[in-house]
Length: 194
Image 1 (tube, rainbow, N blue to C red):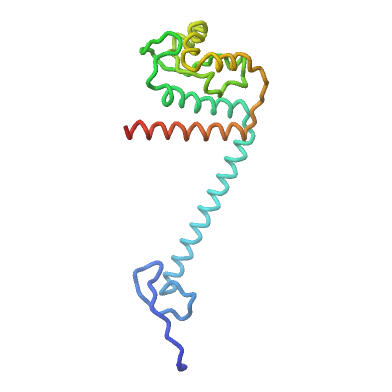
Image 2 (cartoon, rainbow, N blue to C red):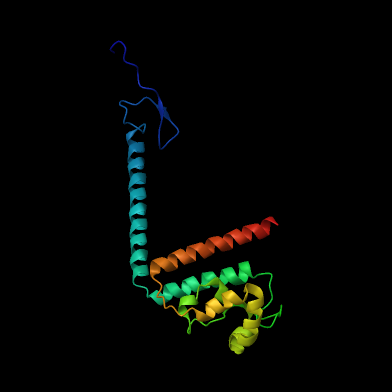
């Protein structure tokens, strides 16, 4: 052995717990048997990674062909959850004031059909009982009276006079969905901390 050259430090085998002295700095296993096992593990890992990558690519292609309506409905569900389970959770029905219902819903002051550009506007959406929202077509007269009390006449007038059409893009819908998911998580954390 040459003077000044240090012998290699012992290493732990990547497959078995054996300590060995490597022949060179790249050796990571102690024997040919362990080398075969290590190669099999690496091959399986690469196969799983490529399968996961192919699955991600397939899911992306599948999502890209879904119509815009799918993304609008998905976003509406997230916004509605924020309204009924977050912001308005401690409030009665905006229209009739009841605290009892078969199901709480997020009722729109101006309907999605009449004003689709306001479908995600928080001033336009409030917690409603199932009866007012479904059977009384949002109980509009009482909704407006209570909405003026809740947000003020200026904001109600702004809602009623907003007729600027807007067609949401998928990117906008993704951003809206992410924002309302985060807002709902934040409200849930605050209510759990209280």
